[in-house]
Amino acid sequence: MEHISQLTAEIRDKAVYPDILVISRIFLPKEAVIGEYMYNRCLQDPERVIVLAASCSGDQVFDRGQQFPIYRWFYPTYWHSSFLGNILKPLVNIVCSFVLAIKLYFRYHYRYIEWGHGYDFPSLLLLSYLLPIRFFIYLHGNDLLCSLHNPVLRSLFRLTLHRAEGIVCNSSYTRDYLRTALRLDTPIHVINPVIRPEKFGNNLASPSSLDDLRVRMRQTYNIPESAIVILSIGSLVKHQGFDRVIDNIPLLLTFGVDVHYIVCGEGSSESELKSLAHRLRVDKRVHFAGYVPERELAGYYAACDIFAMLTLLDTKANSVEGFGVVYLEASYFGKPVIAPRLGGVLDTVQHEENGILVNPNSGYEVFQAFNRLCKDQQLRDQLGRKGKELAKRRTLHRSLYKSEGRNAI
Image (cartoon, rainbow, N blue to C red; front, side):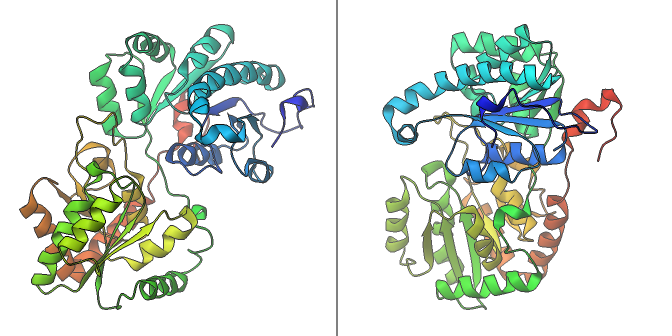
């Protein structure tokens, strides 16, 4: 990591000078979907990007190992979970990103800013007036809602989007939501997240490694190799639909399926879900793994036969399922997916291609999907193979600059 005090240092001679400043308050090594998305973006053009982000635990060691320069603004450690920190963070993000972006301009004379999310956008709006740059802004879902629900921020947000060279949405659903909420002439690009195998550590070295992980993980939960394992990963909150999967476990057992269900995650509904499993007398079949670090998720994906998330459309919650990266990860591991027919899921799961889309409120439809996949290994293998193929597709961020005549990777 380069400190701001080093801004006067000379730029190393390169064949290509960095000309894109990527700004994101969320960036690796902090585990977060937006941080992972922006990091993968930077890996596509390491010779062109400079990164400006908020500090986080372990950032100095991480930053030293990157192919591109990373600058950080500082958060006091006690802010991360304090009430005062939650109030001051947005202000610090706006001020620090604004000031440091100007300082970095005088060092690198970058031509573009890629703003990694819709949060803290007033800083970007001010920079667009003060610096001779063009910019792109990324939108993921909930960051879009935060600005639209505040009347004052909404008008400023609309102005920011109007001034942008382009808007990058993580899914077709986010794009359509934006078009409905704000009628804009600004070009909108859809660039889905991609899977970076390195995030899972060294667990993907070979097929035999995954086989070993599968065996060890099943042994951990005393699950026989012949059993069908369903996996879900996410925050344990009501609208994620974990209860709908648990409801189907007794039915599947009645129909002769030796089934187990592993739930990775933590949240406010955990005790309620455990009570449901106990009440249905399947608590020996439903395994709560708690929070699982990204580097350990490979074992869970390897151990399962079906990945299922039956997220509901929660009209009361201030949230949008912009993409749903866990569906993409499951497909990458060659697992068939059962998913709701809504939101950003449709960019990831194609019905009868790599999974089965259902109405999560239809008990019959959900059960038929589970029963069909549990009993048909050939179908599971077919959907898994296609999912692995689809998960490797990607749209390159260089396409944003195609008017420059630069060749894509």
